[in-house]
Length: 359
Image (cartoon, rainbow, N blue to C red; front, side, top):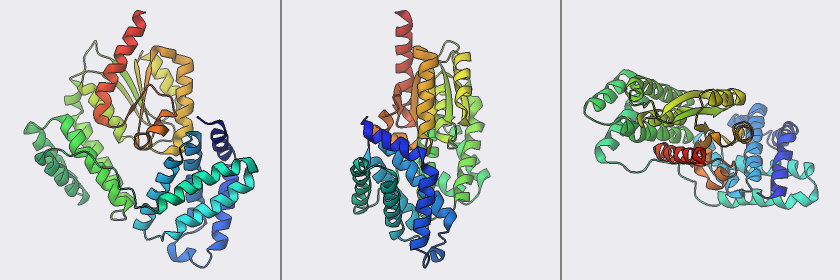
């Protein structure tokens, strides 16, 4: 990890409110004629500016320009879907550059320019397609499509019947999780990004899927083994995206693990206390958005300090799985790129814990 990039990232975090205010003022001043046309008020400029700075700071701490570039391309695609023209992204980059040049000493300017230029270069290329799941057999793919389409019409009861019928026809819970629910969640994310559905549709789909998972849990829990491993699963403080984490916890129980699923937005010390209390060998931490990177980084450091080698740490979540360089910057024991990998990773780490205990 390069020292100067990390230093700049931390400096951005230290002055983020001031920087956001300056960026908002610049954008508002330069675009007073068109902002109302695209519903771009001060509040939106401030929100976009702060989010950009957090993304940039995380990329700097990881010394990973392509991470920020990928985010900027994603942002352009999302804004296009909501009818905001492309020039808005370049406007943001311009005003962010001005504000950062004023804050940082001259010797740090080349680093910022390198990261911003990487984003501008990426904007010259095609949009990055939204992540999708690997191909599966036709019957499961058809089930996934039908499930997604039914839920998007608001027919939760019909979607529930579809899933219960599939279980009765010997479709495994693992297949439903990984090849029906997961691709459906990716698809509604893509549709929201493209402006085809609203955030209300996305939230309804997610809540309905969580309900289906809850209904299956009694069948999952009966697989837990008394002498199996114990894992704690939690989203870091501030992180609200929990479905992927819950899939990991359920799939571990399906494979015999005992899991303590804590859900979204968990305070760091509560996570550590329950991990210690339950003598868990494994701690699974989820972070979807880089804005929660500082929380994850601090939590991992605290776990290492307080629990030492008694627990292995797995991290996952959209931003982490999308970028191996960023994932490696947190120093976890393993990274779960996909929920389907969690059991194999957990079993390997449990073996390492047992070997360490025998020394």
